[in-house]
Image (cartoon, rainbow, N blue to C red; front, top):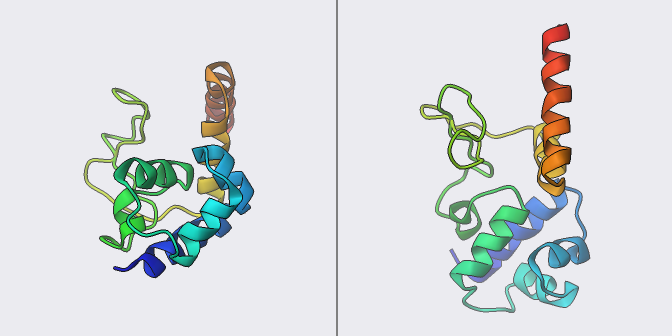
Amino acid sequence: MNNTDTGFRIRERRRALDMTQEDLGKKIGVSKATINKYETGVTLNLRRPTIEKLADALCTSPEYLMGWTSNAVRVHTNNGIIGQNSGTIINKNSERTLSKEEIELLRIYNSLDVKGRIELLMTAMRLEEAQ
C-alpha cells in the first residue's frame, strides 16, 4: 500500500462521514492543508500516532487506513455489551461493516460529553423498550 492508497482511504472515510478537510483537521489538530497532503499522498511516512488519530476521527481502524484490511469499520462484540471495560463496542465473534446511519450515530456519540452520551444511551434504551 502506498501513500496514495492510504490517502484515498482517508478521503473515502472522510466523505462517508460527510466531513470537510477542515472538520477532520480540527478533530486531529492539523490544518486543512495538511489533511489535503495526507489525502493526495504528498506527505510521506505518516507516523503511528497520526494514523491512530485519523482512524479514531474517521470511525475506522489504523489497519484499514494502511490497507491491511478491507473492512472500513470493525465492530468486535462481547455479547453486545457496549463499553464494559474500555468504552468500545466489543463483538467477540463477528465483524461487519456499519451502515452510514450507524456510523453517524457513533460520530454523534463520540462528539458528546459524558452527560450527553448518557442521555443518548438512555433515549436509545427507551426507544428499544417501546418497540
